[in-house]
Length: 229
Image (tube, rainbow, N blue to C red):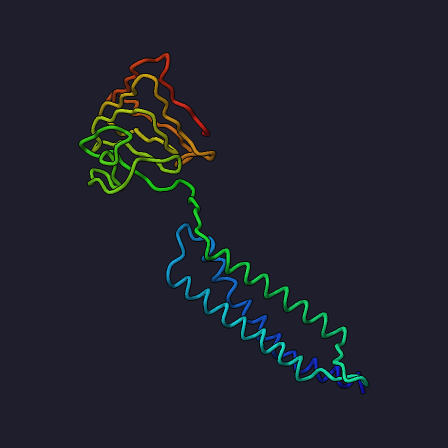
């Protein structure tokens, strides 16, 4: 008799578990994708997380409902539970905890730098390396970005004006078509590289036709430092 009751309970429980696991499988890719985004969670992300919690909570309620409806009593009137039920319940709770952990991670601000960051061009007017007005995301473009960081590839080209370095960093520096004057002030360091190879596996390239000028104000305390090549 008990064997038949246990089988009946498992049959009732199976659809709930299938529903629960299906939600996990459906939501995992979207949650993983959201975690890998290099930005703060959007309103859409928060809504997805809220719906995920609601769906899983509903599944858990149905799971316990199935247990309550299908659990027999012993001769003393106390509810009994089979080992199969115990095992399935532990599995369901474990999956539930894993999914909630992923959702929690999704709601945390994520800062992930793509390899190489973005490419920044010195503008036609030139200027100080550490001034936002010196930089653009297009050759000869307007000031529409910020000072280069260790994740950014920097290009000084034929549309770039004179640039003065007062300490700075970049992932790579391409001045192969530059015809202006690059001046490095005394007691300054330009750090090139972020631990991986620069753009095109080239960390630094100067114009070798003699058309550009690289001036070091004080060679004894001004440095080009390569974090990687």
